[in-house]
Length: 207
Image 1 (cartoon, rainbow, N blue to C red):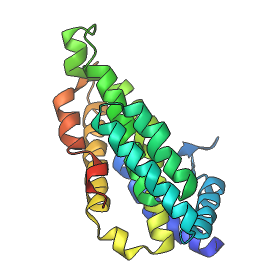
Image 2 (image 1 turned 90 degrees about the horizontal axis):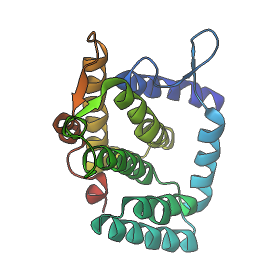
Image 3 (image 1 turned 120 degrees about the horizontal axis):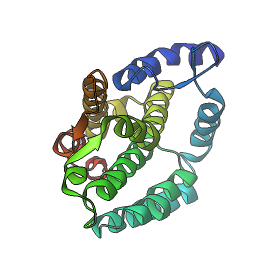
Image 4 (image 1 turned 135 degrees about the vertical axis):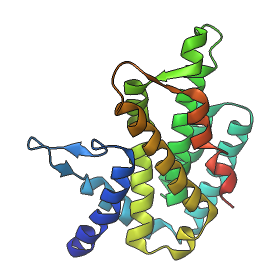
């Protein structure tokens, strides 16, 4: 198992590079530290629950709730009462993709859709805040999802639309983050470019 986890580090580190040099936690020497404890725990739960009928049914119900809430524009309920709840029954990689996407969309909505926000705030996202928000909202969930697919050798998932779109979104957000962080001064990230990276919600690509 340990040998497999060492091999798994390589695709995860590649994925981390799509975002920034700070994609993972760092130790005192600045070396990358991956939280294998959480990953292994999630991996074991997946193996124990993926074929349990009760878990399958409960996860499906939670998933349906999440999608309904999302279509009503209730992002937080879609997250907490829907897809996060579904993960509690079966931690499918697709659910991690969806909650990462949901999280960043929620932050984007709060940032750009507030009627009280100044026009410049609604049009542009401070580059440092954007990098932190991507790191907090989306990155760890995507890392977990890609890691599970790799470790469990989920070929069908790897060939799915949601997997391919999640990889494309990650690459786009990584390029966008680095593009503006590399510039001097207080430039911000245009909201329309963030929306272009996110594209259509990932939950529409599952099933």
